[in-house]
Image (cartoon, rainbow, N blue to C red):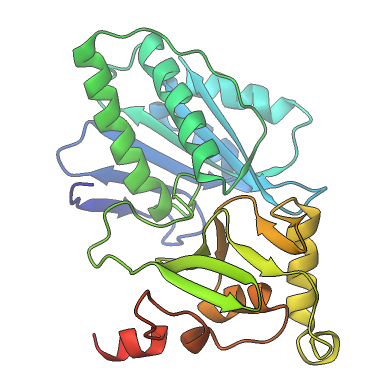
Length: 285
């Protein structure tokens, strides 16, 4: 991903309220607002343009992040429709438009299709909608839209959403993190540090039985494993738990604790292929 200078304007001086983001040498513009300030956002002239938008919130039934990704030739009209509908999960909205008003219907449909695809791959949010048309664009237009998409990837986290951020971390980090292993009994997990914590990779395994001390000394581990079992992240397989997808944890210790079935020090539980602990690797940097 190329470097970028992002200009963030806060009309009210509050990063939780309306925000406007622009990137140097980019014809696009992003606008974001909490749902409580939707009317103020709708009053802006940029919303007369075509573009793509994100409705972001939490699924009231599961407590998991949820999103709706859409496109419209007139963003203002589409958001008014959403406001009128009984779609109450979303608490904030982010809109991307073009300052030169050069986004056609085919362009925004292409962007919507790609955004839905990337958000599914990232796996961080449940999607309220999952189908979008994939229009055929001339090669030059596809390249232009891929550049536009790369800017959305950069700006969206600045506006408070990691919807498109891969759980496994950046594909090209400035300092690549080593692939680490965590072994206990016949369980074997693979993972690495990421920008947001620690990821355990799909196909890793964890012990099935909790340690006797887990219920009293490490109740968070019990609760976390139960949640991962309930949402299908951990499934029983040949006397172990199997990770069905890349899974992000807040720290190496939280990841190791799930693998161990009880409290664990992630700095010593995770090791590289030569046997060096994560602590040793970080001390040597």
